[in-house]
Image (cartoon, rainbow, N blue to C red; front, side, top):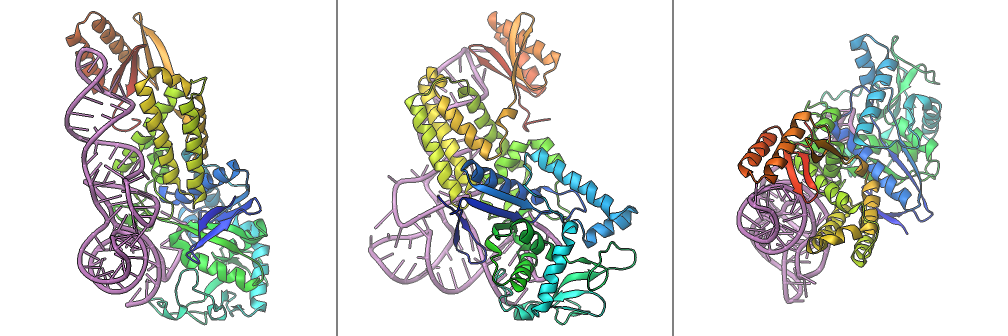
Amino acid sequence: MTIKVRDTLTGGTVELGENGRVGIYVCGPTVYNHIHIGNSRVHLFWDVAVRYLRSRDYEVKFVWNITDIEDKIINKANEEGVSWREIVERYTDSFHERLALLGVGMPDVEPRATEHIPEMIRIIEELIEKGHAYPSENGDVYYAVESFPEYGALSNQKPSEMRETEKGETGHKKSHLDFTLWKASKPDEPSWESPWGDGRPGWHIECSAMVGKHLPDGADIHGGGTDIRFPHHENELAQSKGAYPEHEFVRAWCHHGMVRMTDEKMAKSIGNVVDIKDVVERFGADAIRMWLLQSHYGGPVDFSEKILDEKGRSWERLVRFYGQISPSKISSEDSARLATGLLEKFDEAMRDDFNTPEAIAAVFEAVAEAGRAISANPEAAGEFASLADAIEEVLTILGFELSAAPEEKAAEVDGVSVRYSGDVGEGALRLVAGREKARKERDFAAADGLRDELHSGGWAVEDTPEGPVLVRRDGGLRE
RNA sequence: GGCGGCAUGGCCGAGUGGUGAGGCGAGGGUCUGCAAAACCCUUUACCCCGGUUCGAUUCCGGGUGCCGCCUCCA
């Protein structure tokens, strides 16, 4: 079985995984600041794709890089008067911390640019030898775009029609299209030795080097945001194919859409970024996951509190339903049929360009149908073991934390058994117990009064045959 | 100015040449002392104008709008 992936270079569909192996490289962050929710999309999404592929027994090598040398890092270090390495370590840690908050797993390798200087130098030498690059007298080395006729193929642009920089200055470059492979360093800047003097790598060359090193057979998938399709990926392609024309570099380029804030791209340069830490605190990681996975990775997604709230409610519904059937010990025919159907639809959706919205829809369809059966016959709730397993399997692959569903606890308060989840104060428990007593005495006015009091405290009571359950209900999922 | 992408019901969002994906919300019901939760019913959509077709939301052409890239950017 193969998977189909849409390739931005050709616009067509590429089939991958014939040999059971898939190599994935995605462009990671430049660590000069905290990553924002938009930056995280690439990691969250490809982590899900990798989980899926592994669950279907593909041998996956997953790589994302860290750009740990770049102008912005140096600038930040100068601003703060600390070393560039300190900036790198601080924001690499921050990056990892935020991914963990989102429940995103780590790749197999997380190479850093500065660990691949010799590999980069080798490619640059190769490019110079083949006439695709030239050193200038100031110690910079540039790529000669004109020497590579396919330049522009990935971003669908003709070099001749590309806009020149506003100032029209080319500096030491022969053409405004040429880009830097190696940048001569100034006295106080970090630098590495090279045949062209001390300097540091340009942005694009690191990915050519790291893909080559960590995925020597070429990347099946090379991912990143649509905004780095040009120039970053275009330049990478020109470098790698220029230096090694016979070697397959990337089989499918997959670009994901931008996270938008009120119809505008979320970007540090615009200043409309949302910190992952805040969003996770406010809405929970699963709501964020539901939000990002309920739309296709290729298109844009809008960020808003309203949408995140909605996604939280969707997720809650799944958690509730799963909680209802997960204690099942046996599987009815309905359960087996729904479980099989769910797994089939899930597979079909994921194989088709990782269509996570359709995959999630399959879960809801199964949930709705089983819910109907249970509504018709409450006894049936205990006969959905196989469906519970299937739902758990699917949601786990998608990276949701079903186990993080609030654990139900029970307490004896004033002789009344109250069930609840999360952190509940003594006061709230007493109110529930009081209400339960009033109900038993059929003093409904008093009972409703106590319920109103709970309500204003952000709590709701659900009466069940086994007694009252206290749940948090205050708009958001958390305080 | 150049290139690319997208326009789907109250909102969010898949998908398809011909029997309403899914979610959220709203209204009505079943259940409940009343609620909540759950379930049922209703809310039957595909930007505009042409064309191809027996038939187009889906294909083609034109238009409009939005977004992204062309400079650092996931």
